[in-house]
Amino acid sequence: LFRSNNAEIGGDTIPAAEYPAFLRELESIRSNGFAANFEGTEEGVSALGIALHNRHRHVVGALSVATPATRFRKVFDAGLVGALRETSRQLEIDIAANPADAE
Image (cartoon, rainbow, N blue to C red; front, top):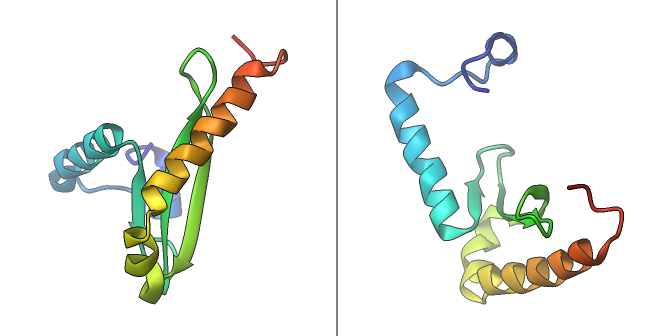
């Protein structure tokens, strides 16, 4: 994705020297079960996101919460990760119950 011609055109490439760190970050996200964005997309905005899975454990969507960067730590410390995990668990139950769920 970050090495493709389209990424080059969009200016989203990762230099070869930084690619191992990028892969480590992805592994950390998989391990933690969530990803954080600290003003990486929009100045002054931080966010936390979690993947949503179907009954086959395939990723079918995502849930994220964004907040002004100045308030992110307070929201995070107040239990944001737990709240996102519980909400995603409930959504995944609904997704799994959907008969239109693709294999």
